[in-house]
Each structure stands twice: as C-alpha cells, then as structure tokens.
Length: 71
Image 1 (cartoon, rainbow, N blue to C red):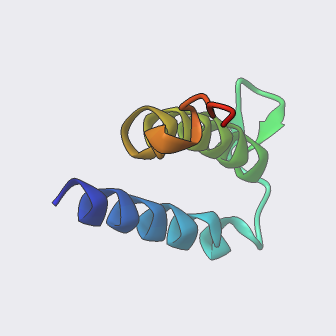
Image 2 (cartoon, one colour):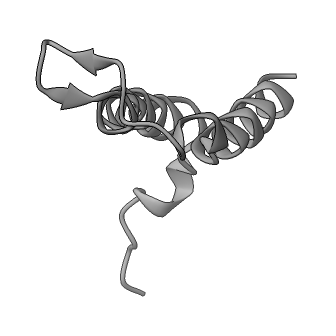
Image 3 (tube, rainbow, N blue to C red):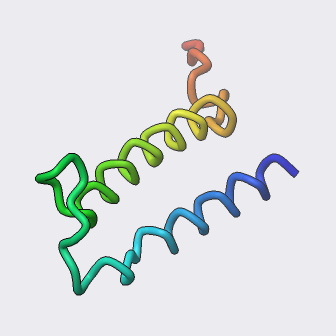
C-alpha cells in the first residue's frame, strides 16, 4: 500500500511538472517582480525535494547499506 501511494505521488508530481497553464502569460507577478511560472517552479522544486527526502526515508532499500563481510 505504501509503495502504491509513493508511486501515485510521483506520477501526480510528474503531471504537475507540465505546467501548460502558465506558458502564455507572465502575469500576475508574485512579490511584484517574480513571474508566476518561475514562482510555480520554485515551489514545485521545494515540493520535489521534500518528496525525494520522503522516498529515501520510506523506500530506500536497507540491504544496500548493510556492510559486506569479507570471507
């Protein structure tokens, strides 16, 4: 179940990355100088960073971190 939710989250974020709704306009300006498309990608990047942290915490294969014993 957890794996399915993480995959669904990644798919939704992938679809949100295709921000076609801001392609043809630079207005409104956020904070009076930042175009809305650039602000969207700034927020999107912060969200993606959080999701990557979540993926490492919840889905990282722990067997990769186990020390190898020499025989």
